[in-house]
Amino acid sequence: MQAQTQRYSVLMVDDDPEDGVLVQKAIASSGPKVDFQFVASGAEVLDYLFTEGRFTDRSSAPRPNLILLDLNMPGVDGFSVLKQIKSDMDLRRIPVVVLTTSEAETDIVKSYDFGANTFITKPSSFSDMIEVMTSLKSYWFDAARLPTA
Amino acid sequence: MLAIYEYLFGAASFVPHGYCLAWRPDLIAIHALSDGVIALSYFSIPIALILLLNKREDLAFKRTFGLFALFIFSCGVTHLTAMIMLWEPYYGAQGMVKAVTAMISVVTAISLWPLLPKVLALPGPGQLRKMNTQLAAEIAEKNAAQVNLHQAYQQVEAQVVERTRELQALNQRLQDDVRRRSLLEEELREKAAQLIATNAELERFAYIASHDLQEPLRKIQAFGDLLKSEYETVLPDEAVEYVRIMQNAAYRMNKQTKDILTLSRLSWDSIQFDSLDLAEVVEEVAFDLKERIEEAGGKLEVGPLPGIPGDRTQIRLLMQNLLVNAFKYREPDSIPEVHVEATLHDTGAPGTGGACVEISVRDNGIGFAQEDAERIFSIFQRLHGRSEFDGTGIGLAICKKIVENHNGAIEAVSSLGKGAVFNIRLPTSQPERREIHAGTDTAV
Image (cartoon, rainbow over all chains, first blue to last red; front, side, top):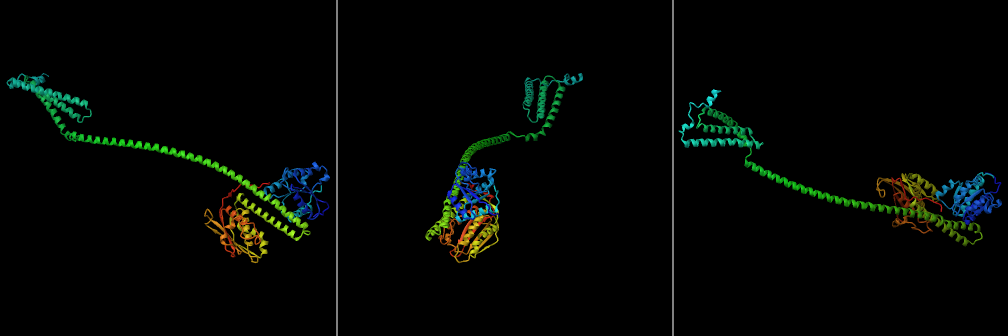
């Protein structure tokens, strides 16, 4: 375990802002504080990550340490976002957690094939959501080592 | 030479025969004429015979005919000489002629006697007539036979024509059948395509049920939780209770949609028959239920279980549902005891009647009335209120579907308060793979 010396940042992309609220609340009630950013579409998350569109100013779009990615989104869907992240020499190092309502085996397989680091089906209760967020934070920000850059 | 001539025709010392007749003209005339006519007649007979011989080459006894001709001829010569002798006394010549005639007569007579039986053996005209009649009859018979044969031939020919016509008709019918069948096959293919389309729709529906319907439910539950965790202290107790009821309802509906999804998937997912160790499957399920069993102080006894061909996921779900039920439906303070046993039978597999495994899950729970034994396998059929026993009313429908997918049969035997036994018969051999539906899971 490494001592927490930096403040981690989580970026969530989901076309359902209500889920954004739930996740944000869950993250807030699970251990150390992290920055939480939320965007509501695939196109927007790409702008965010590549500092384009309304995110040209880096300060408005801090580089995330973990991405929570929804699959089923209108327009640019989760798989396209995943593909773009994982084919970028720099962004590919950011762990991507697919957080979706889907339980389908094909979605699970495809996600890992496209380079997802974890696949999680959204839990139905808030307490389970807190548990998931606690595990994620504990794993990625505590147990695992991530590149500092 | 002269001596021979003298011997033959020397007439000097003899008188002619007419002299003996005193030259009486009447006697001379009758002798001369008779001998002449006889001679002429005798000469004509060999001519007729020779002509006959020449004409009838198939004539029997030709040599004898020839001898006879010579004999008659020589007789004729004898009579001719006798006629000449009336006037000229050539007694030597006449004697020679007679001698020659005598020799021929002897030879002819001798050759005639042995011939007699042979001639007699030849068919007489009467016999020939009879034979002829017989022959005619035979010919008539043969003709009649030929007519019959011809008629038979015509009959056969007619039959051949008839059969040919029948065959042609049959052929036509067969062709029609083939055409109809290919039409039916075409229809079947269309139906199959429709079925696949329907199944795809079902799949979409199942996905919508699991995804789109569960999504709002998940929200109700999650925000209910959030409401409670953040505002429980400031909300009146009654409000907190309302939230709890709402969440319970959402939870139940969530479970129900999931069960429906499971059941619908059992109808269209492809099934994979592997050789399963039933004991291992039950052990896994028992491990999952361990806590629940221990909590109730219950006991699960598992007898020796055989290997069976089956779909691992489905058989696991089947055993899980049956065991959960076996432990669930009991009096609150009773100690649940559940037995799982299996017996092998050489016959009795549903449908085929082949070898089968009979698995029984027996409990000592509250049981049910035997008249409900069929009803409990129908979807949404519940025998108890929700306050008594939790459940979606889909579990046993899922069990039945799984058993049917495995070409088996399930039945329940019970009476109220006496526990229940669920008997499952599964065939010991399965087709390698049963394609129910080429379904795939896809994200919506």
